[in-house]
Length: 534
Image (cartoon, rainbow, N blue to C red; front, side, top):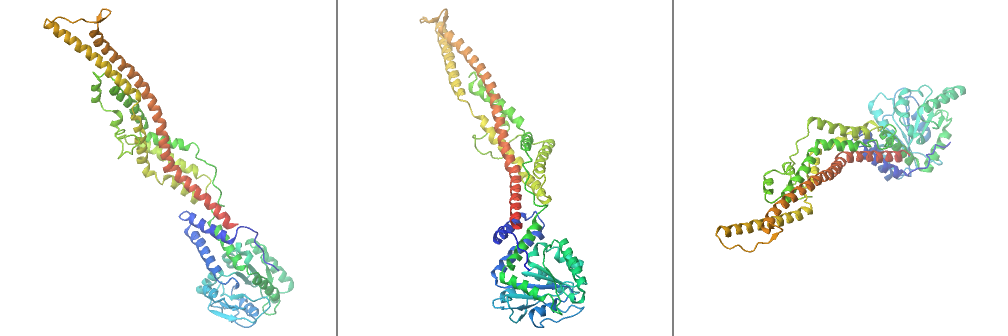
């Protein structure tokens, strides 16, 4: 009779690495008990592989009175363990070794001090057979010893008797939790000599039914009598096969990895759903923009553009008066430095109102909730927390983005310089006309002879220069103001797009990116769990 084989899949090394990765990714998101158990499995696997892989450690485990010590003596070929009827007589695990050379470090790791050399037997070389204390012993130390070694040995042989094979403690505490270990497990119904043949068949059928309910379908079930020797050859044959294959230790570790990965898996470890937050990034950007006072900034951009245009292109006679009026952007502490330079300190944009702050918090919460849809509870909570993780820094980051981006709106168009030059040329002509007329007036006042006076038609040139320069300067200033008004609107629109992009980038960095990182972490976690369980 052969034990079941695992289907081909990733190597044990790959599965152990995946289990460690899943444990690391699940840190802080899954119960610490499950994470620690996964790490313990990986650590135990490394230790077991470093010890003798040429020996197979099989353990006889059972309840008080099941006759496991008697079976142990029969398999060992001599009376090594004391046999009792109703009271537990095995207080400490002991080992029988067939060709035990090199098994010392392995038994030291298992902490089994009692060791016996068993007589040579065909096919048994390399077997280390343990007789464990009773798992239902009245002594806690016995039960703890069983639990410790059941978690370490390569092959588990559960010895039951016709009276207690259906014991709930055995099935609920050991067999059902070890469903993934069916490849390294067999069940022995001992003391069948006490039953008539028909009752033996009924007990075996009922025992197989209980094992199927435990998830242990296909686990070998043997009818044995340690007293008469019935079924013992079959049991020896199975043990010989397992010892010869030298694979029980790896199968045991693989089952441990499967169990640990199953505990890490949450609600089947569903894959990350398709992006649920489509459109919420725009809503988040809108809420952040409102809270950052973007409408006020855009109004200041347009007004500031017109203000600086008047200062740069207005009529030189009156433009200096504009300097006494504050620049709307500078009033918000925007544009006080050079464009593209980091703003030092906060702008003077009014702080967000309570309603605006609530809208931002709602937008952040909606992003987290949408991204967490269909995720298992612990990971959904982690995604929602990731959305809020950097929210305390958000206001300052948005303010810096607004200040940095809006500073670009203070750049002066080139045509301002050309119009400024033209204005001063016109002003020079007007001043020349005024000076010329002043000279003529002075000469007339002093009764000096008048020089020849050129004219344009009937109008003297000095008058043309004075009046024409004044009219031209005012006209250029008016046209420049109209152009500045239109330019201010265009600049406000461009700044609005730039601010939306900059604020969107802040939202991406401080809200969406942490959410995406958590979703990516969950994706890697599910992939690692899938590999570990395969």
